[in-house]
Length: 239
Image (cartoon, rainbow, N blue to C red; front, side, top):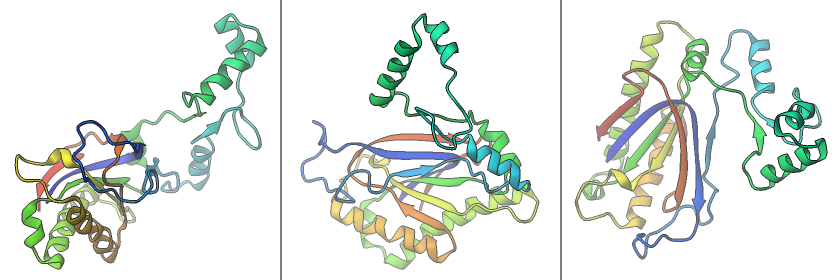
């Protein structure tokens, strides 16, 4: 397998389109059956701070819906929007609701300084593992193949945690993201066989104590990663 491992404290991967593209090979399989069932949404952890109240404060500002309501800690400053846009308050409100209905402004989020966040947090984020199954993997014994994959994850995790030099720090979330763009110029693996191999990886990681999930296969995706600014933030491996 060819893998690219990203050390992130934000990872959002969601299915964008279910219709096949014009360049999509015929007969390409999909996992799971319906889009968005295996989407990933990992935000900077608020539970990893020694000051519990600080984590709770950050969690309150993690997402503020529009229009604000309920127990939201933030309210929209309608007079400011009205004056800045040169509109009446009713027109400004209608414009905000239009942006919301189009999916352009679903909510307000905290501005993350990702490097500082992980430096202060005991939870050292997640690993997003872009993975491509090669034809040679089909002839390998399943246990040996999964073990080699897990070993590469263990090696990187230990390197990251050892840099902290303090006890109580964790890096346990791993997301396996199928990525055919890593493919070399060779005969592609049949999709059904590739999915079979990919599905064996999260259970193997779980046995080693990770919180692991397999992202979808065969869908067009929107990917957002916040990668940390150190040499272990991105690592390529052939396992």
